[in-house]
Amino acid sequence: MSPIPIAERCRRMGTEAAFRVFARAKTLEAQGRDIIHLEMGEPDFATPEHIKEACRQALADGHTGYAPAGGLPALRAAIAAHVARTRGIEVDPAQVVITPGGKPVIFYTYLALVEPGDEVIYPDPGFPIFESMTDALGATRKPWFPGSGTSSRPDLDALATLMGPKTKLLVINSPGNPTGVVYTEAELARIAELCVAHDVICLSDEIYSRILFGAEHVSIATQPGMAERTVILDGFSKTWSMTGWRLGYAVAPAELAVVYEKLMTNSNSCAVHFVQHAALAALAGPDDEVASMVRAFEARRDALVEGLSAMPGVTCDLPQGSFFAFADVRGTGLDARVLADRLLEEAGVACVEGPAFGEGGDGCIRFSFAAGVSRIREATRRMAELLGA
Image 1 (cartoon, rainbow, N blue to C red):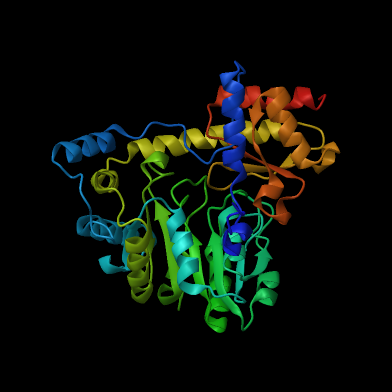
Image 2 (tube, rainbow, N blue to C red; image 1 turned 45 degrees about the horizontal axis):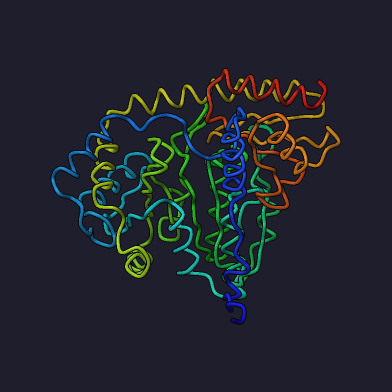
């Protein structure tokens, strides 16, 4: 048999290094190694009990069939109310489309908008799927440095030079993965001005909007002229520790939401019915476990950044949101890929090399602080020992 003729768009498509590292880490654990998991973008907290109970009740009530492609009407209405409350913008439930996780929102936005030869501006370093989808659809890459934590802010002058007549889509991510940056309202106002001036649609990844450390989350959709040109990506994975439940949503201009429903029909049919009932319980509260989780993340962040910053040749900005620290390791004299591999294989610390998030991540390593403080301190001790510090 001749080789299967894989479509070029799939050959151009990338993947996520975190899953590769996770698989290798699990293999080492199966061999008896003690591995500290700082690689995955996954809270290590249990899903709150009232959400699990709502799911059990939904199963008992027989909610195991298809749901509408756009999502249960009650959930779409609840999300619209949630967005109005948390972002300060009015949303029609018809603008909300429920998806199996947040990634389909990225996938559908690109499919709905981007043609070969269009330009896509995306954060670099940033979530790898932004670059992957740009390549898969034959668009032109326009990577943009998104800023990092508290000391390094987004280069808005550089963003202005990237905008042009071929720019179809701008992707932003605040709070950001992997850098932990949270955009100020003034920064978002300037970005919005550029989008309006160049008639560019913005995909705003706000999946970490509740995980903040002294910063305030503002959606770019609140800026003048942006409600009609912004797609908000959010979901239940991070805020309520529901990564495996696979439930996200888009809040989009009405004409785009119709396209997303069509894409849902052609790909997934619908998000899981009984999980949507669990999501209703998540939105209804109580919210104390979310607040407790964020406080725990802040303590972990402080322990991780303190440990990394104490090592010769390592610097680490203080993340303002998400649960990632992006450490610059160039001062160690080691290539980031080599060091990340050695940390896993020799020290039992799973992390992700910065170049996996784009060329802008060269010389850096991403550490998730979705592990307890004692494990984080042990991870930095092992890393310091490997570096001879």
